[in-house]
Image (tube, rainbow, N blue to C red):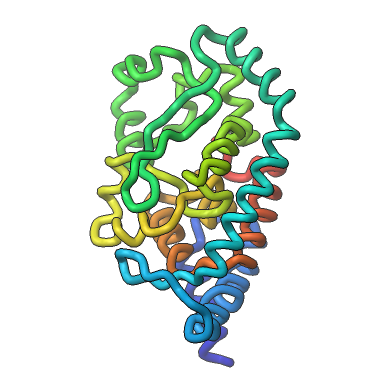
Length: 260
């Protein structure tokens, strides 16, 4: 028991992203250790598994249950969000010219292209505006793929990002099976390269609308810490931990924890 507690404490310290993470983080890490890794060790011999390209075994029952869960919740979410989505699209168009929906190419499961749907939060000429970044802003962009006080973000875009409402269109990605509710956040090719020898592991699972990093850290940690958290999820994912992450995400959004 002493060794187990020491291991949990060590993991908690290793994954602590600066001092801004809220106190529930340590409890979540303890849950993760007990509710994910230990349960995984007990069940992997009993249940049938799928072996991904990277050698990580995934419980088929978990995969099926997760897909059913994704379909049910995405349908409910789409039905509830239709009217708010229409209002948001009108506000986006009024605030700045351009299409209200933005399609961003990311890398999905097993390296397949994923066309992620988002409400547009930047000006139409956002790419050209990068040429006006200060050296400090450009350095921050290259390090974290985002910057503090990004001048490309519109007025309504700032609200959508703080509230995470810009992600609502991804319910359609979830319904199509391209995305899951919980999983590592999908990345672009440049980000994927930073995973090095762990690229295949990262791509072995369906990416998510939210995940361990998204729920507990978001912008409050370095990109290296983010990668560690995403890979830890891949190794230890289970259905009950997914539910825990969902509730943690709701809390983080309501508190606007780590939002930029």
